[in-house]
Structure formats: C-alpha cells, structure tokens
Image (cartoon, rainbow, N blue to C red):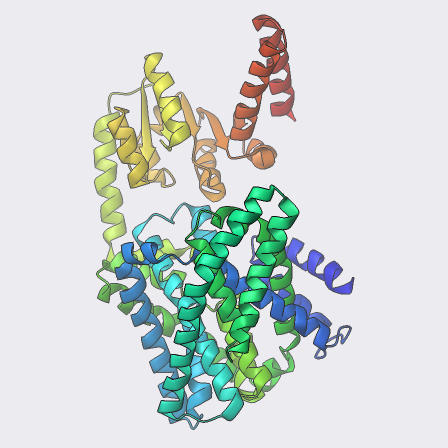
Length: 552
C-alpha cells in the first residue's frame, strides 16, 4: 500500500509537469528506501517483483525488435548505433582505466553511459511531431541498437559477477554459449509459440490468452535461466518471436499493464539503492559525470551522425536529443552495484548523474532545434520557404490559413475547394505533403509553428486559421501568434480528443473540435436515423449535444 500510494502521487506529479514517469518511481525508491525515510526495506519480496518487471521490460523490447525493420534502417541502426555505442564505451572505459579503475567495471560503466532513454525520447519526439524527421529517424535507429547492445552487457555483468576474471577466451565462450542458447530458444520457441497461440485463439477465451502470454514470457525466461543465462534475455527472445507474428499487437496490449506496474517496481528498487549522501560526499564526481553526458556524449553522437551520412544539422539535433542517461543505463548500474562488480564509491555518483540527466531530458529534447543555429542552415531554410510561401499567398485576402494538411486537413481543404473559398495549407511532414499534393490541394512545405512562415502565408490578412496538427506545444504557439494580431482572425483547432478543449479555449481559440467528438456525433446521427428518427429530428438532437459539449 505504501508503494502504490507513493508511486501514484509521484507519477501523477511528474506526469502533470510532462516529466518521465520513471523519475517518479526513482524518487519513490529514494524517499522510501534505507538511505532516506527507511519505510520500505530492500527485501527479497520487493527484489523478486523487480526482477519480474525486468523480465517484462525485455519482453516488450523483444516485441519491438524486427529484423526487416533493422534491414530497412540498417545505416541508422547498424552503422550509427554501433559507432555511437562503441565510441562512447571505448572513450569512457579507456578514461576510467587510465585513472586506475579495473577493466570490468570500466566497461560496464561505459555501456551504461552509452545508453539513452528510449521511452522518454520517443514520447517527446512524438509529441513534437519529429518522429519522421531525419534527426528523429536517426535517433530511433541509434536507440534501437542501444536496446540490443544491452543484452551482451547483461551477460557480461552475470559472468564477471560469478568469477571476476577478464580472460578473453572465457568471455568469448560465455558469449558463444549465450548466442547458441538464444538461437536454440528462438528456433525451438518459434513453432511452439505459433502453435500455442493458434490453439489459444480458437478457444476465444481472453483469460486463457493472457495466461498463455504470461506463461510464454516467464517460461522462456526460466528455460534460458536453466542454461546459465539471465532470465531477461530469454524474455527478449520470446518477445522477438512473437513480435514477428500476427499476434504481436494483441500481446502488447494485454501485457502492457503488467509491464508498467512491475517495471515501476524495478525502478523503485533502483531508487532504493541511490544514496543521496553521495551528492554531498562526491559533488565533483557527479558534476564530472553530468559533463560527460552533456557535451562529451553529445559530441560523440554528432560524430556518429556524420559517419552515418546525416547532414550536420540533423546530426547536431540528434546529439542534443540523445545526450542523457536511460533506463537501461540505470539497469546496468543497478545490476553491477548489487553484484559488487562496481563499488559504491564508483557507482553511486554515476547512478545519480544518470537520474539527473534523464529527468532533464524532456526539457532538452524540446529545444533540440537550437542545435542548428551554429550552422546557419535553419535560418536559410526558413528564408527560402518564406519566399516560396509569400509568392503563393501574395494575392490572397480574407482567406483561410490551414495549418497541417494530414488526414483531417485534407478533408478541410476539399470542402474549402468545393465552396470556392481561397486558402493556403502549410504542412511540414514530407509524406503528408506529398499525399496532399497528389490530391491537388494548395499546400506548401513549411513549419507553421514559425512566425515568419505564418506571416508569409498572410496571417494578418486571413479570415480564419484552421489548426489540424495534434501537437500541444505547437498549437499553443500558433494560437499565441493569432492572439497578438489586431484584429485577430478566427481560429478553429482540431484535437485528438476532448482533454485539451478547455485549455485551448482559454487561449482564445474560436472553437475546438476533438476528432472523437466529430466521429462520435456522426455515428450518433446515423444511429438516430436507423432508430426511426427523421433527418430534422436527428440533426436537431445532434446539434444540441454538439453545442453543449463544445461549450462545456
């Protein structure tokens, strides 16, 4: 009860401030653990659930692992990922060894620093609409390789914890055994999993399906454990096999609640191992590790992007995005500290630095566009786009500025064309831009979040601005631009759901239309007709409900 109550409070606060939930769990562990309030002892029961969380975490990583995906993005994953992890580990481990640190802990600490947070990065990039950008794809490729690189590092932690030797042949033997066990597990598990899931689906029992998923993840983990490897590696294999099957999406949906809760418990135990007194004992060391994460790791990622063939601007933005610690770095350090492979004097400052940089990551990723400024290309690109948009909008007055021309924006554009109302659409996603162009819409390629782009589109002469992209911060920026005009044009905002209606209304949006509201009311209108209502009665009822919901 103490763990659940404290976790709910901490995660709720961190989520409200758009901070990663992992930081909330870590804070709970620090506060309740033996180094602070000492309300919860790091007992075997807690550690057991944490190990289950780790198993399900690796199972979910396996679900995301796809060989065809890696082949398609082989330059970003295999080239950029391997260079980034290799350079970071080599530089950090080499620097530690020169200061007298043993090779084994130096390698593990280098691996921990090489990892960035997949969950935090992808969530933030998705909110900013940058997943499909060049720096977004490069970041995703490197993160995928980092997740895969965690596996051999976990194997090394287990091997060195047992005998502490660094014999190359012993390491190669351990890796060979691991590779053989994983290959055997994958070969044996593939037909068994497919046959088992096919049989379970025929039963049409949701309970049986969930039990079979749990049995698959835990059973494979236990089988690999019997072979002398870490159980999470077996869970990764099971997830990888299922991830390439047609059962993937249902498995991911059913197992996610178990993963989220148990992974939260794992990070609570990590937090219990953080000794805040180390901040007073080793402030210089912690600051040094933060410096390693910020400029040094960013520089290495920048070099990696250039080697992978990305231009300087994309490489610089990727460097800023990945210059922080990650959950797998915390995992490696927690395992190394628990096993005694890394001493507390070495590990505690790094563990604190990992947590600090991970907590700051969302704020830094939000401002990754600043990394382009030293190269000047950002301003040149905006200027070129501005000239093109001004040429297209020069003769427009009392027109509509359509911000975003995706699936919703294209429908709006089609209606405006049918009504012969002049408009100009601005789209920054290349795929959606090309799709709109193929359909014959008046769309220009640009980023409507920038004031110069909106001015070039004739914002001060517009009758109406329609915002159809669903990125919270971007919508706020556009509404602030509109609000600053006198007179200000009307504004319509389309959102994914109704959670942001009140917030955007406070920013003086003329009306906010959640997509779920539009789809639900359209279905309701058709339902009323099929239930015997006349067209006029159905329209009257739906319009009344629509007005009440929008006002609410």
